[in-house]
Image (tube, rainbow, N blue to C red):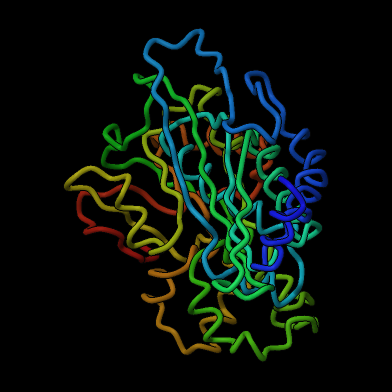
Length: 350
């Protein structure tokens, strides 16, 4: 690009040099995610990946795309941008692992009001960390500067993941049966859903985000709310590799229990869940108290302490918990069972 063109673009509010610097700064983070099959670095026109499909009868590609919603506002208020990328990766790969798919690669898209190289690199460092934790490669992305459309401090991030699963091994809920045990994997907090309500409950634009609170076990509101979404890829892979008959998996995102758990259940089956069995973090009690929110609305909005719910044969439940513990999910717990006499999701302690 010649100097006159650069000057004209700069006058329009786009900083080309910041874009170049951002790419330079993010390269070490992208390098961390290199896995076998990743053929390209950043800077090309397309991300290249050559998957090893040996041993698969009928490979099926599984894709997922998502963002992090208004949780972004917390990152902006706290001026901490190195974990929001983990959320973006988690929201995508936690979905595709529910099908039994092994994540292969990830791409991100960042729209930003003013391209600040250090901020963009910080965001991408989180994306890279999420990719490392889930074993996939970051093979491309885009940073788009939007002067006059977004304010200088604003940005948004979205991502796209692709994985692969052998067709006979797809987890689609069709094998879920009456009496299957339901196992919950703990969340790291609110994750990336329900933040429009969270922001209203705490009047987040004027809230004290930095002072430790007794209600949050000495942590600050900002620290707890910005905690990155937990990744469940390696935990579910441990079950699959351990021979567990994983009948169904549900990522507890927007819509909480009532919308997500039925997505893994065949027609005519529901879920009976004991709330008392769920390791519920203090943040959910604080949200409910401050917002005067009903139990139903809490379970219809938030993950309530469980980011993933699995359906396994009852005879394999103890083995599943043991494999999960060995994979780092030491707080996984049986929370209920699949039932023909439940409509949708029934919350009871029976």
